Length: 411
Image (cartoon, rainbow, N blue to C red; front, side, top):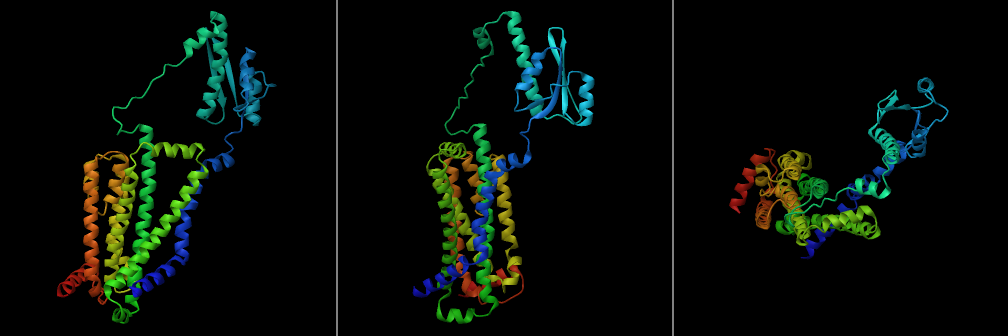
C-alpha cells in the first residue's frame, strides 16, 4: 500500500504544479467573469445611451415640448422651425434626423427623416412621445376624466396555469437550455483534457522503456490504480475549487437580481436532481478516463497517443453535439436512443433530465447502464494493462487491440 501512495503522490504533485493545470483551473473563471461583465462592457463602449439630436417640425408646440422633455432619448434643436432648415441641418450633420408632424383629419401623421435607417428603439420612443400628446388632446376633446382613462387603459391580467408541476414554462426552458449547453461544454472540456492527461501519463513511461523496471518492484494493478487515483484527485481538486468559487459568488451576490434568478430556477427542480447531475458527470468522466487508460496502455509512445485517441475523441464530440440536440429536441428518437448509450448519456441524458423530458425510470435505467459500463471498463483496464504496457507494436489501434486481447486470454 505504501508503494501505491508513493506513486499517487508523485503523479498528483507533478501534474498539479504544471502550467497547463493552472491555466485549465483559471481559464473557465476568466471566461465566466467576462460573460457576466459583457453587458456592462457593451454599455461602456457602445455609446448607445447617447440621446439622438433631432428637430421637431409641428404646428402644435406641445409635440416639440414633450419630445424635448424625453432627454434620455432625444436632444431637440429648438432653433429649427421649418422643414427647409431641418434638411440643411441634416445635410450639414448638425442633427441626425427630424420628425414632421402634421394633422390628418382627427388623426396625426408623423414622418421621421434621416440619412441612415432609424433603429427600433428610436422609432418606439418617438411613437410613445407623439401618442402621449395626441392622447392628452383627445382627453380634453372628449371630456374624459382621469378615472375613466385609467379604466380604459388598465390591462387585463392573464395568468399562466400549468397542468403539471413537472413542466417548465417557456422562459424556464430557455434558461435551462442555456445552462445545459454551458454544463455539457464544461463536461466535454473536462473529458478531452483529462483523457489526454491519462493516456499521455501511461504512454510516457512506455516511450522511455522503463516499464520493465517499474513492474519488477510494483504490480501492474497497483501501478495503474495509483495513476488513476492521482488523476481523479486532480479532477476532484478542480471540481472542489469551482464549487468553492460558485459558493462564494452565490453567498456574496445572493441579493442581486442575477443570482436570485438562478436560485429561483434551481428551486423548480427536485432536490435529488442535483445528486443525479453530479452522478452523471462523475461517472461519465470516470468512463472516459478508464477508456483513456486502456488506449494509453496500447500506444507505443506519447507521440502516437493522439492517433490512438481519435476514435474516443469522436465519441466525445458526438456526445456533446447530441447534448445540443437534446437541449432543443429532448423527445427526438435519436436523442432518446443516445441518452441510453454510456459514452453519450453523461451529456445527452443529463440534458433530457434537466428539461424534465424523461421520467425517473428512464433516468435510473440510463444511470444503471452507465454504472455497469464503468465496472466493465475498470475490469478491462485491469485485465489488459499488464500485457499492454509491455506491448511496443506500431500496428495501429485496432490491430494492437486484437493483440492485447490475445495476451489477456493467455494470462
